[in-house]
Image 1 (cartoon, rainbow, N blue to C red):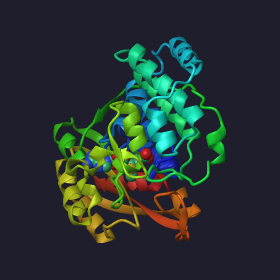
Image 2 (image 1 turned 180 degrees about the vertical axis):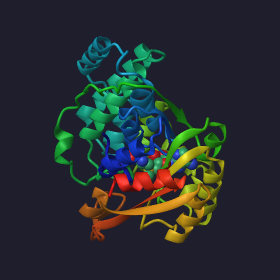
Image 3 (image 1 turned 60 degrees about the vertical axis):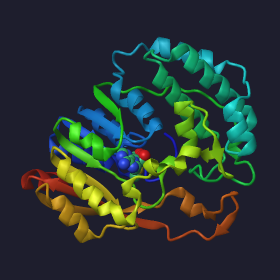
Length: 347
Ligand SMILES: C[S@@+](CC[C@H](N)C(=O)[O-])C[C@H]1O[C@@H](n2cnc3c(N)ncnc32)[C@H](O)[C@@H]1O
């Protein structure tokens, strides 16, 4: 899986147990990011809707949530991956923007990303292989990047993993059914069917995913936009409509309140942490609209970038790492007996 700010990797066993204890057969993961949580729900047999505003997240959702690994033609996928793996590199947009002007990847890998991405577009668009191949390319590129995990800056010298050769691996499709949707949570939520379990993991602070992961966004869209600054971010990252109300202290609470009001679910699970703008009592108020509320706290290992240090735009270390622990809150709301059963399952 890609390195992702706020990814719930270490909470997956807990969220999976909570999901099972809820007894839900249908679930929604509304800020799905890497789709880890949606995958965990799918693995325990739920029909899952995964949704996010990012194109790369939609690509992951089309791969791991929408496709049924039991009915997919794995030989066809393996052959396509093998053909792409053998392509000779050819420098293009990706190499120029992200390996030469900015240095997120070594040019030898960037040239292969260019060649593979062009071939996926010309030979696989419109086929069932399109998204799994793209997912495999993103995962392969992430394994050889030269960042601390966000694409606001690259390291001054090459990270040692960036010298490895890009390798396309089987993305390992999951059995079961689901759906992947791209869009603004506040809009999407109005049109979704009711689900038994809804999981919400909105952004925590002012850091915008659209800017933090602009390379993946451009790699999936393949629209080759003009860029700006040392980080070579997409020009449209500056547009007002790309700003999420969840990234502003002023608008965050209201946005979440509206979202919860429009959400049609029996049980709601919301992730939040002690570095975010909402207080415990804000959380209780907002979640209370869905019934009985309990909050469980977890000591959660801080995102790796902040353990390594604080970097400026040129990737130079300019600050000392912050405290290494943060507290993740899991807020559970719904019918009292279900909420209590869920809490008991993780104690
Ligand atoms: C904390 S991350 C979710 C991480 C995810 N649970 C995981 O484990 O990978 C928040 C996500 O919200 C998405 N996002 C931000 N604003 C959004 C909006 N207005 N509507 C939908 N998704 C949004 C971001 O793209 C990001 O993937």
